[in-house]
Image (cartoon, rainbow, N blue to C red; front, side, top):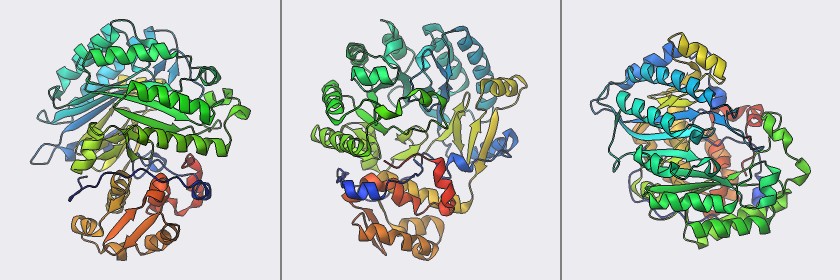
Length: 471
């Protein structure tokens, strides 16, 4: 997705507590459209193979992005909703890498050799569960099978749990080719850390930040979560003040979604210790106020970045994108998902790998790609995806751009959607006319709700129950 024309700097969202309460419904985060709830079990490795082959046909080779899922964690964080395996047995990593390398071999054969990898992301779980030798093997295998862009052109990121770092770990990561780091922090308050079983003293985070800066990584991101047990507006304000002093290039401030019926580890959280709705809104308001006062730009939803960060640059250039890792700068890439439960987006399909170690190992050992489910997007899916992703990334959309790309009359095609948008217009969240849809500052925090008006799959209200609260 590339947007033509001048992109205005994003205004920070205006906080309207009454409106937020009124629109506090369940809804997708739109890391994809259609969302993963629409993935089908009859989409298998054979269907994926067709998509991969078709993706090789462009006269100018489409670049690649690799996502590798490392599922292991030595300890469990009670809030976690990721697909993970909790173990202290490091031998599990060797068996996992064996199967991951087999999958990488199969995947690499599907794509033309002249397709350059411009982006790589190692996520989890805890990627630094792997020791230095295992990470070196992983990167050597990646470089053997794929053509990686130079360090100055590619984005090679790894998620780090600062508690797992050894003194020389950061230098080794840089030597292996990683040039971007995402640090899990969540909250610096000791009471909150105890309540979620993630004890991470501030000195540990500061030490990791200092090492990352010393080794010359291109970017440092941090993750925070609001809505955790024992959090208060005052305690989170102190956390933000200390994080801002560390000056990460970008920040994700996620809303904790308490869904213990879906994620068993969350059953260990004391629900009575969760902040109430009013305190949670105050925490969100504080985060917006403190970060924008510290010159962080609001990218969208839960992402903030300093003006010099590549997310801000991509937004100004019209190349900002959204995928399964959140906001991204490389929307022109085909995404190959590698490892248990990972999701890829190739050409016009989404594909998810087997979600348990047992099924993942069984498929790979049998010489089959471990694709378990997915979807081939229809023309309507792709059109609506462009609308939703444009609004998420730029808070505005020109119907003429859609008409040019899809040979439709926008407001004829979206006549019912225009009626749904009227409530947002009445509430001062949107400006809508024949030539422009613009999300106003009061509507920026409610962008998920606005995008839901264009979601064909949410006509059945029961679908919404599969998602977290919008805020």
